[in-house]
Length: 79
Image (cartoon, rainbow, N blue to C red; front, top):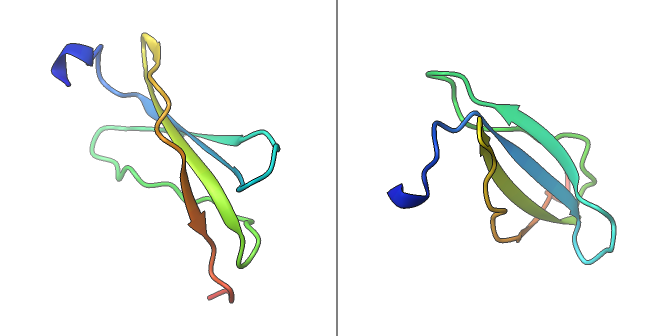
């Protein structure tokens, strides 16, 4: 929504944790640079494990709202 837009996005906080646990989210900060791909690799995850993931954009004014939590599963066998 344009009415909720308060400046250019400077980056994202990517939070992840083992799904179904009370563990806190581990956050990774991804800064956005002009013309740069907006993707992020999360490494050192366990095989065949469900993870909960959230994303939060930030800019010069601070952090925006947290995304809905999604659940994903890593592959059973590494590539």
